[in-house]
Image 1: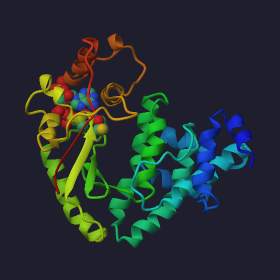
Image 2: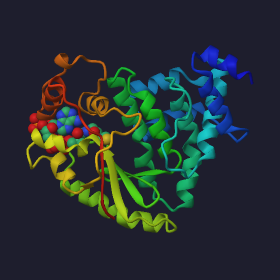
Image 3: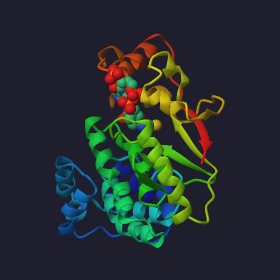
Image 4: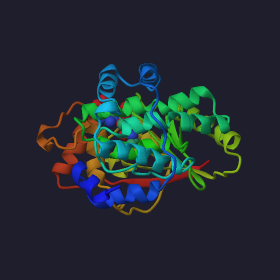
Length: 303
Ligand SMILES: CC(C)(COP(=O)(O)OP(=O)(O)OC[C@H]1O[C@@H](n2cnc3c(N)ncnc32)[C@H](O)[C@@H]1OP(=O)(O)O)[C@@H](O)C(=O)NCCC(=O)NCCS
């Protein structure tokens, strides 16, 4: 394959195509499901009707270019080659459109991995249904969200992450990393129930892994939020569970951008045009307008 040509025709840097080619090598890809089975599959994955219609309308065969077809094939191979992995993994260039198909192709692969680990079907499908949630968020964000999401969603299709009740739990070396989907309020009771579920789930399904803590890296752990949110708010109560690590600005991640992502689902709206509907929204904009910055903080507490 002429990698320079692929990159030029897809309009992406050649280094990204070379990376896909290198990581995928000649590993096996994952074939797309039969198109007739896709509507039902999309429903199981909580994909909203408008997103489902878009996916079906853009179905790769036969109208995709050879370059995009190559990218889909090699990017499923790249993700599949790391089945069982639990680090974030960019599946390929940040191009809208191809990774939803890769995700669908990888479903049978990860379902088999889940079966091999005795993961209950309910957990398996609840986990994988984060696709629908992410596509809906990206639609709200007018496409601004997808570059992060495609990398995030490789966790789900490699068996690296499980949705147990209110929280998503990402496997790691000695810590389970917690993620908070947008799914209603983060009540302490729902968090407790999810943590308890995880304490039983991981020893049962991953007996070779030994977890000593739960960890989290998030804008939600920024102590500056205490200047604005009431002590009994769910976010502050969630913060109180953690012992924070000393602050270090993470590389390649701008907390101000992440706060806008999660508080407004827009990265491009000027500060003075952002809605001021909630305490948090007012806090985010006022803090930034005062020339201050938000922090992405990490913390942990015992497993
Ligand atoms: C995490 C989350 C569920 C917390 O929501 P919550 O349980 O309502 O939190 P709190 O009780 O602390 O809310 C305090 C105030 O902030 C508001 N608020 C909380 N999260 C908000 C959000 N993402 N956007 C806008 N306002 C928000 C609440 O409405 C409330 O304001 P009000 O009293 O004026 O109504 C919510 O922020 C969310 O869905 N976030 C998106 C996902 C996310 O950020 N994940 C972490 C990624 S690192």
